[in-house]
Amino acid sequence: MKFLLWLGLVLAAGGAMATECRQEEYAGNRYSICEVDLTRERLELFLADEAGSVYGHFGTLDKALAARGQRLGFAMNAGMYHDNRAPVGYFVENGRVVQDVIQSEGPGNFGLLPNGIFCIGEGRADVLETKAFLRSEPACRYATQSGPMLVIDGELHPRFLKNSTSRYIRNGVGTTADGTRAIFVISDNTVTFHEFGSYFRDRLQLRNALYFDGNVSRLRAPALGRDDAGFTTIGPIVGVVESD
Image (cartoon, helix red, strand yellow):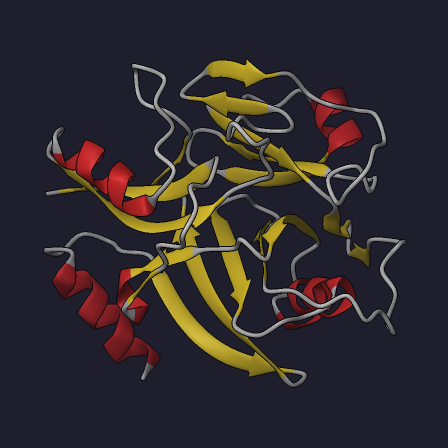
């Protein structure tokens, strides 16, 4: 079944490698998962066009790419943002630093330290806890800071409560140890932080994973026939760019 899904993706993409997406149930919750191979796919972060207009929707971004002979494949909202859609934390778009790293503790999920940074480099992507990121100074062509970290070196965030009653649709990303694969997940029902983090750690076996957002979480997954529009614009978007 998985082979047939993969074959369908390849044919739909005209023979090019396409993002593998699937749905599954784990510990009583349902999830949609998309895995991006950084050695074969072009993964980028997007915020605004050259005129400074925020894309805000997957469809708007797809139209902008179409004008360049490209198209948007998989996509997901990628980090928290202010009312004007500017990123709350560190953000790098095509080598340009839009917002510097935020190290201080603060209100909301972003300030629930430790938080982290999703860094896309050449042929790899990594989720790093913010202080570890500052120590290692990796080369990121694209980067987005969000929080909290879901999994840190194989351990759940220390503030997650197993008996929490705070439940939302949530989305986030984890990366493999060699950096070649980025695994994006959105819950298809409301989940707690503990449940969401446990999915990355225990089911996906990822040692580092980062929370993107909750409640406003959106996914574009052509392989699943899904393209969330929503009623409001979003800030940072992560997505795979495909050639026509």
